[in-house]
Length: 330
Ligand code: SAM
Image 1 (cartoon, rainbow, N blue to C red):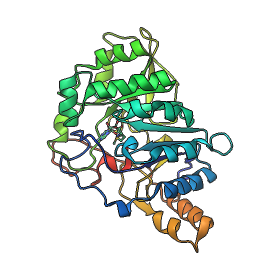
Image 2: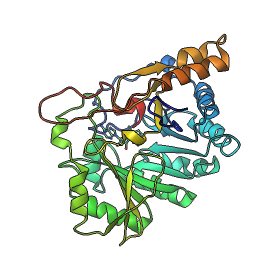
Image 3: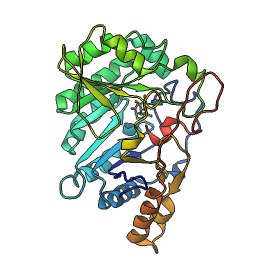
Image 4: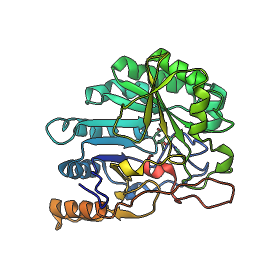
């Protein structure tokens, strides 16, 4: 699948549910209204849709959410997708999780063919973690992270950089990740959906964070890539890597290779734009069949926009897009 700007689309991110067992303050409002179950695709439908994308050349699938592992029966989907690795265009199935259910699922994920996962953990401080997630238990997340490591999964820790929340922790987090053999990926907060408080109060440019880190660590630019938007550096002192996802200070749209499917079958061709395509109708239309679904996907790809234009400042602008990150899963 080639978009109008000549970019090959080979990466599909699939949100399996909009529900989450945490309420990270920068991600969701406290009183979120979740979708009625009747609107959400069944796991079989998600599997069929993923199959259609793989048939069109998608090599990497990432399951996300909401919280990926709270979707009931999600392992059935992971196993079915994992079974296609190698025998189709599919090379990798991975997931992003908040880690709360990971201790329970780590071994099953490995057995299903998953080899690496991203776990979101914004701080190493239990009280700050509870405040940032509104009720999360850091010990439970870390128990999940270590279960994943024991199961043989490579773990990358994702942390959104937030002024006044974790900005003084990055040295410690880099050391902790290095000690346990995890890469760390820092992310700039993006203006998606209304949340409590001002985004401008929390926004921390990663250009600044990187300079601060250089005071204590030797960061060598690396050409390592996981097919996502992060730019990596090798941390000489630990042997691990630190990545930076910088949608605000340096967007990476020119190399964008991905599209995002929500749990209702809506395809967003850009994280920072509202344009979308409904794939649920063609998926459920027996008369259209597989060819109809294929054409609907190709039509959507032909509308993939050039990029997003996220801005966070104090002029009180509305979020770039009204939907929360939990709709598309980042
Ligand atoms: N529940 C899973 C998790 O916690 O990773 C998957 C979904 S979560 C929406 C995916 C990632 O998006 C998390 O790392 C989260 O911190 C990040 N995220 C959420 N809202 C964000 C925002 N406004 N800007 C940047 N990253 C955000």
